[in-house]
Length: 219
Image (tube, rainbow, N blue to C red; front, top):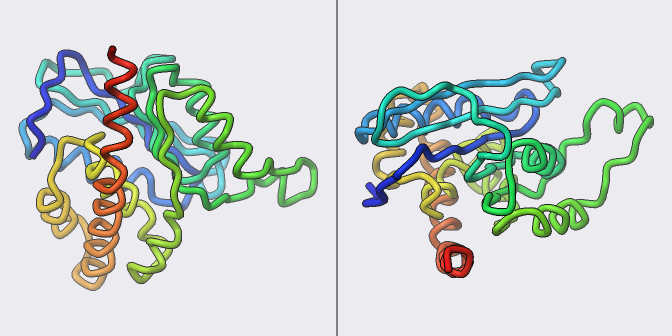
Protein backbone atom coordinates (compact mmCIF):
# COMPACT_ATOMS: atom_id res chain seq x y z
CA UNK A 1 0.00 0.00 0.00
CA UNK A 2 1.17 3.53 -0.80
CA UNK A 3 2.20 5.89 2.03
CA UNK A 4 0.50 8.82 0.29
CA UNK A 5 -1.52 11.04 2.66
CA UNK A 6 -4.42 12.98 1.12
CA UNK A 7 -5.24 16.36 2.68
CA UNK A 8 -8.45 16.40 0.67
CA UNK A 9 -10.36 13.78 -1.31
CA UNK A 10 -8.64 12.21 -4.31
CA UNK A 11 -11.07 12.30 -7.24
CA UNK A 12 -10.78 9.81 -10.11
CA UNK A 13 -13.16 9.31 -13.03
CA UNK A 14 -13.18 5.99 -14.87
CA UNK A 15 -14.83 6.72 -18.20
CA UNK A 16 -15.71 4.81 -21.34
CA UNK A 17 -18.74 3.46 -23.14
CA UNK A 18 -21.28 0.92 -21.95
CA UNK A 19 -19.96 -2.64 -21.96
CA UNK A 20 -16.30 -1.77 -21.35
CA UNK A 21 -16.43 -2.56 -17.64
CA UNK A 22 -15.51 0.77 -16.09
CA UNK A 23 -18.26 0.41 -13.46
CA UNK A 24 -16.70 -2.86 -12.27
CA UNK A 25 -13.26 -1.23 -12.34
CA UNK A 26 -14.34 1.63 -10.08
CA UNK A 27 -16.16 -0.68 -7.67
CA UNK A 28 -13.22 -3.08 -7.43
CA UNK A 29 -10.79 -0.22 -6.78
CA UNK A 30 -13.21 1.27 -4.26
CA UNK A 31 -13.55 -2.03 -2.38
CA UNK A 32 -9.77 -2.41 -2.25
CA UNK A 33 -9.43 1.15 -0.93
CA UNK A 34 -12.04 0.44 1.76
CA UNK A 35 -9.98 -2.57 2.81
CA UNK A 36 -6.92 -0.32 2.98
CA UNK A 37 -8.65 2.01 5.44
CA UNK A 38 -9.93 4.82 3.21
CA UNK A 39 -13.32 6.50 3.25
CA UNK A 40 -14.69 5.79 -0.24
CA UNK A 41 -17.60 6.98 -2.38
CA UNK A 42 -18.45 5.63 -5.84
CA UNK A 43 -21.05 7.12 -8.17
CA UNK A 44 -22.00 6.23 -11.75
CA UNK A 45 -23.36 8.46 -14.52
CA UNK A 46 -24.83 6.74 -17.59
CA UNK A 47 -25.58 8.08 -21.06
CA UNK A 48 -28.75 7.48 -23.02
CA UNK A 49 -27.79 3.88 -23.83
CA UNK A 50 -26.13 1.77 -21.18
CA UNK A 51 -24.40 -0.42 -23.79
CA UNK A 52 -22.57 1.80 -26.23
CA UNK A 53 -23.47 5.04 -24.45
CA UNK A 54 -21.26 7.19 -22.26
CA UNK A 55 -20.51 5.85 -18.78
CA UNK A 56 -18.52 7.70 -16.13
CA UNK A 57 -17.78 6.15 -12.74
CA UNK A 58 -16.70 8.62 -10.05
CA UNK A 59 -14.33 7.31 -7.37
CA UNK A 60 -13.55 9.53 -4.37
CA UNK A 61 -11.40 8.54 -1.41
CA UNK A 62 -9.42 9.96 1.51
CA UNK A 63 -8.72 9.46 5.20
CA UNK A 64 -11.45 11.89 6.25
CA UNK A 65 -15.22 11.74 6.71
CA UNK A 66 -18.01 10.64 4.34
CA UNK A 67 -18.05 12.04 0.81
CA UNK A 68 -20.80 12.78 -1.73
CA UNK A 69 -20.49 10.32 -4.64
CA UNK A 70 -20.08 12.71 -7.58
CA UNK A 71 -16.99 14.79 -8.31
CA UNK A 72 -17.63 18.55 -8.65
CA UNK A 73 -17.01 20.10 -12.05
CA UNK A 74 -13.33 20.90 -12.59
CA UNK A 75 -12.18 18.91 -9.53
CA UNK A 76 -11.10 15.58 -11.05
CA UNK A 77 -7.54 14.74 -10.06
CA UNK A 78 -7.29 11.95 -12.63
CA UNK A 79 -9.24 10.70 -15.64
CA UNK A 80 -8.82 7.02 -16.45
CA UNK A 81 -10.13 6.64 -20.00
CA UNK A 82 -11.15 3.35 -21.54
CA UNK A 83 -11.62 5.19 -24.83
CA UNK A 84 -9.96 8.44 -26.01
CA UNK A 85 -12.99 10.45 -27.14
CA UNK A 86 -14.78 9.82 -23.84
CA UNK A 87 -11.59 10.62 -21.93
CA UNK A 88 -11.36 14.02 -23.65
CA UNK A 89 -15.05 14.73 -23.06
CA UNK A 90 -14.78 13.99 -19.32
CA UNK A 91 -11.50 15.92 -19.05
CA UNK A 92 -13.24 19.00 -20.48
CA UNK A 93 -16.23 18.56 -18.17
CA UNK A 94 -14.67 17.52 -14.87
CA UNK A 95 -10.93 18.17 -15.19
CA UNK A 96 -8.56 21.08 -15.50
CA UNK A 97 -4.87 22.00 -15.84
CA UNK A 98 -3.95 19.99 -12.74
CA UNK A 99 -5.69 16.81 -13.91
CA UNK A 100 -3.69 13.76 -14.99
CA UNK A 101 -4.94 11.40 -17.68
CA UNK A 102 -4.39 7.67 -18.18
CA UNK A 103 -6.02 6.51 -21.41
CA UNK A 104 -6.24 3.46 -23.64
CA UNK A 105 -5.79 4.49 -27.27
CA UNK A 106 -8.26 1.97 -28.75
CA UNK A 107 -11.25 3.90 -30.10
CA UNK A 108 -14.89 2.82 -29.78
CA UNK A 109 -16.91 4.81 -32.37
CA UNK A 110 -20.22 6.16 -30.97
CA UNK A 111 -23.56 5.59 -32.67
CA UNK A 112 -23.38 8.81 -34.71
CA UNK A 113 -20.10 7.69 -36.27
CA UNK A 114 -21.42 4.20 -37.02
CA UNK A 115 -24.45 5.75 -38.74
CA UNK A 116 -22.21 8.00 -40.83
CA UNK A 117 -23.56 11.22 -39.32
CA UNK A 118 -20.25 12.38 -37.84
CA UNK A 119 -16.57 11.49 -38.20
CA UNK A 120 -14.48 10.13 -35.33
CA UNK A 121 -11.42 12.40 -34.89
CA UNK A 122 -7.97 10.81 -35.36
CA UNK A 123 -6.77 9.36 -32.07
CA UNK A 124 -3.42 11.27 -32.16
CA UNK A 125 -5.46 14.49 -32.44
CA UNK A 126 -7.52 13.53 -29.39
CA UNK A 127 -4.37 12.72 -27.41
CA UNK A 128 -2.85 16.06 -28.45
CA UNK A 129 -5.91 17.95 -27.23
CA UNK A 130 -5.72 16.15 -23.89
CA UNK A 131 -2.03 16.99 -23.58
CA UNK A 132 -2.86 20.66 -24.13
CA UNK A 133 -5.46 20.60 -21.33
CA UNK A 134 -4.05 18.25 -18.68
CA UNK A 135 -1.02 18.14 -16.42
CA UNK A 136 0.10 14.86 -17.97
CA UNK A 137 -1.23 12.18 -20.30
CA UNK A 138 -0.16 8.54 -20.32
CA UNK A 139 -1.61 6.96 -23.47
CA UNK A 140 -1.01 3.29 -24.27
CA UNK A 141 -2.42 0.28 -26.12
CA UNK A 142 -4.65 -1.04 -23.36
CA UNK A 143 -6.51 -3.38 -25.68
CA UNK A 144 -3.22 -4.93 -26.74
CA UNK A 145 -2.37 -5.70 -23.11
CA UNK A 146 -5.88 -7.08 -22.55
CA UNK A 147 -5.45 -9.40 -25.53
CA UNK A 148 -2.10 -10.45 -24.12
CA UNK A 149 -3.88 -11.29 -20.86
CA UNK A 150 -6.32 -13.46 -22.79
CA UNK A 151 -9.48 -11.39 -23.31
CA UNK A 152 -10.15 -7.84 -24.57
CA UNK A 153 -12.85 -7.52 -21.90
CA UNK A 154 -10.04 -7.48 -19.32
CA UNK A 155 -9.21 -3.91 -20.41
CA UNK A 156 -10.81 -2.65 -17.22
CA UNK A 157 -8.34 -4.58 -15.07
CA UNK A 158 -5.44 -3.44 -17.25
CA UNK A 159 -6.41 0.17 -16.50
CA UNK A 160 -6.93 -0.43 -12.77
CA UNK A 161 -3.52 -2.05 -12.60
CA UNK A 162 -1.93 0.78 -14.58
CA UNK A 163 -3.54 3.39 -12.30
CA UNK A 164 -2.06 1.66 -9.25
CA UNK A 165 1.33 1.27 -10.93
CA UNK A 166 1.34 5.02 -11.61
CA UNK A 167 0.39 5.71 -7.97
CA UNK A 168 -2.93 7.24 -8.98
CA UNK A 169 -4.41 4.60 -6.67
CA UNK A 170 -2.56 4.01 -3.37
CA UNK A 171 -2.85 0.22 -3.72
CA UNK A 172 -0.34 -2.58 -4.17
CA UNK A 173 -0.65 -5.24 -6.84
CA UNK A 174 -1.29 -7.82 -4.11
CA UNK A 175 -4.20 -5.78 -2.77
CA UNK A 176 -5.74 -5.54 -6.24
CA UNK A 177 -5.25 -9.22 -6.98
CA UNK A 178 -6.83 -10.13 -3.64
CA UNK A 179 -9.84 -7.95 -4.41
CA UNK A 180 -10.16 -9.43 -7.90
CA UNK A 181 -10.26 -12.93 -6.42
CA UNK A 182 -13.21 -11.86 -4.30
CA UNK A 183 -14.92 -10.17 -7.28
CA UNK A 184 -14.64 -12.57 -10.20
CA UNK A 185 -15.77 -16.15 -10.69
CA UNK A 186 -12.95 -18.73 -10.54
CA UNK A 187 -12.88 -19.22 -14.32
CA UNK A 188 -12.22 -15.49 -14.83
CA UNK A 189 -9.61 -14.96 -12.14
CA UNK A 190 -6.52 -15.93 -14.11
CA UNK A 191 -7.24 -13.57 -17.03
CA UNK A 192 -8.07 -10.66 -14.74
CA UNK A 193 -5.03 -11.24 -12.53
CA UNK A 194 -2.78 -11.28 -15.58
CA UNK A 195 -4.43 -8.07 -16.82
CA UNK A 196 -3.79 -6.40 -13.46
CA UNK A 197 -0.16 -7.52 -13.54
CA UNK A 198 0.41 -6.25 -17.10
CA UNK A 199 -1.25 -2.92 -16.33
CA UNK A 200 0.66 -2.50 -13.08
CA UNK A 201 3.97 -3.14 -14.87
CA UNK A 202 3.07 -0.56 -17.54
CA UNK A 203 2.16 2.01 -14.90
CA UNK A 204 5.34 1.35 -12.94
CA UNK A 205 7.41 1.86 -16.09
CA UNK A 206 5.70 5.21 -16.75
CA UNK A 207 5.79 6.43 -13.15
CA UNK A 208 9.17 8.17 -13.25
CA UNK A 209 8.11 10.44 -16.11
CA UNK A 210 4.77 11.24 -14.49
CA UNK A 211 6.42 12.00 -11.13
CA UNK A 212 8.75 14.44 -12.90
CA UNK A 213 5.78 16.25 -14.41
CA UNK A 214 4.04 16.35 -11.01
CA UNK A 215 7.13 17.84 -9.38
CA UNK A 216 7.39 20.54 -12.03
CA UNK A 217 3.72 21.42 -11.60
CA UNK A 218 4.00 21.62 -7.83
CA UNK A 219 7.07 23.83 -8.03
